[in-house]
Length: 297
Image (cartoon, rainbow, N blue to C red; front, side, top):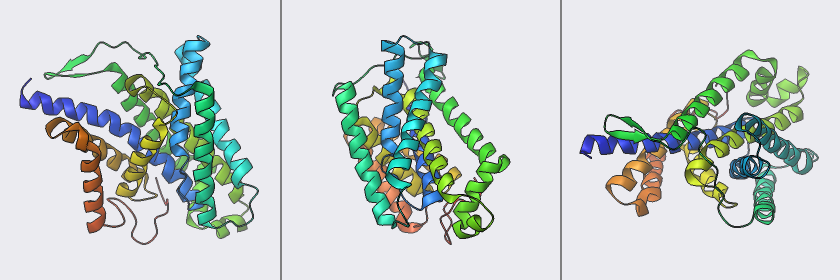
């Protein structure tokens, strides 16, 4: 394989894994814009999506078109349930308290998953076979196309939701000014609950489509959350387009670093680039320097 083909191969791999980081980062941003906190349980939503999908398809033998939406709904219920039980009852909690709650939720969900599915990694068959598709001397797995398609569907769905639906506009109003939103009759607490459900659903989709490529275990969500959080910061916390751009960028840098330098340094390379960008532009690539709030996806 020549240099051009190798580079193209690394780009394909980087875009696929970067799409997952982008979806995780979008989940971070949705909750941040509604609550002002970072949900450190976001990675567990990704892990649960993959685990539920494995159970539904390999244990219950459900076909893919049925198991996929069921797995997403189950994770959405977990996200909504977590918010209703741990966050909704609190009266004017501080941001620090909310962050600590999400960390505790992450640990709890991870522990429950370990007891439910064990410590071994779970395998999920590829959705459309494992025969690579040749492109200009490189190859791409059909499952990677599922990942890219999922990211495109999530981005288009969020753009439509926030710009075309009454609920999405209400969430944007809460992000701009929660007090003013309350004055016009918008239930901010209800919007927070919806943001957790929406974030959990996106995390579930990411977990489902990436499991056939990387396998899934109860600890996998932590690393994906770390990379997704890095993408959210790099893109500009609260910025939807920034999350997508930064997620793809981190994925590509990781892949190129692993290919041309060493796989041992791929995480360090992405982190160095992240720190360098933030040193020059602390608000991130597409972040708002005045207020890192979601004003328009």
